[in-house]
Image 1 (cartoon, rainbow, N blue to C red):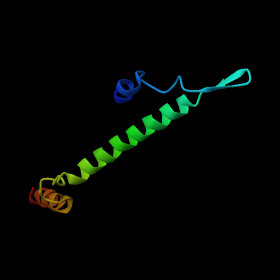
Image 2 (cartoon, one colour):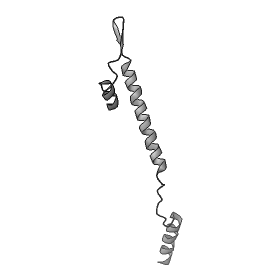
Image 3 (cartoon, one colour):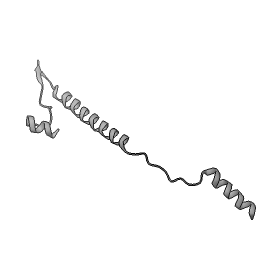
Length: 79
C-alpha cells in the first residue's frame, strides 16, 4: 500500500465515501480490502511459481525398510 500512499497521499482508501442521508457509506474500506487481497494473491502466485521452479529434493538412497529388517533378522539368527 506504500505505492498507493505515494500516489494518493494516503496509505489506504478508507477516507473515500459518500453521505447518504444522515449516514456515511464508506466504500473506501471495501476498496482497501480488495487491493490488499489482490496483493496477497499476487504474492501467493509468486511463491507458488518459485516453488515449482526449484528442483525436487532427493532423499539419500539407503537400504529400504525391508532390507534393514532382513539384516536384523539375519543378525539375530546368527547369534
